[in-house]
Image 1 (cartoon, rainbow, N blue to C red):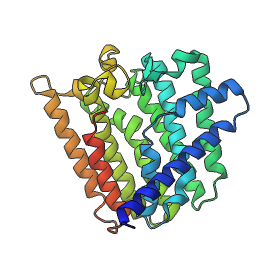
Image 2: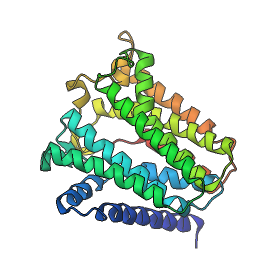
Image 3: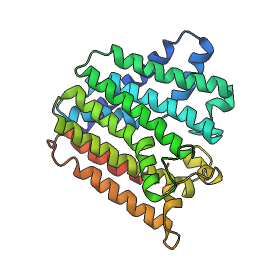
Image 4: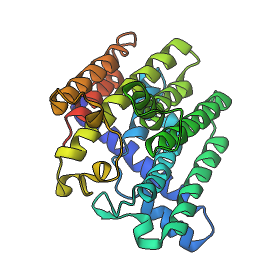
Length: 295
């Protein structure tokens, strides 16, 4: 059998196992209406963060499957953030479907988001893995960063002024820190080598900055059919994005495209110190594909 076929079958199996764990985590909640709302919130995602967690574990010398529980917890936390984000943005579409609060109302959506966070922590706390305390600390820190970043995004935090450095701090906290944690946690499952974990965290941070810049670009130039939501929401809500932070006398699309290339190149450089394994090559490919995506 060709090696690419073996790798694809392994990727499919990992993807299946992550979906199974996500469903099990939501199914463990006793309330039927709450469980149904949670199930709705996890449907249809790209599963980028759990895939990166599994790849980081393999790139750090472990078996990717060993990181399935923390990978699932990362995706549950991400799903919770989207539920709350949609409420704050007053968005009625997500992934081409009605958002949770549009279907079930704001109170039910808030509860579902909170429950997703709870089952994520419960999954991590019960997982059989080394370095559990460090992993929990990393996960909790990423959660707090995410909340701080969202606070800055909606303009409630005086500590995030609407200037270029303040905007970069907000993006780092809201988006990049969770990607960095996904990579660091995957590495921690495999190794206690702090230099390896740090390199993979920095890869995730740089990739997160590029990812958000690409999202901002697509928010302006994308279509509802491709993106699964109405473009221009950030502009209508007065949000600060990479595009609005570009200097007025420059071509903002070109400027943001340049930032995407810079952060992606920085992410790829962080992989240079790792062994040239198939997992490392996959991480290189993921970085390239994420910034080339059209949705």
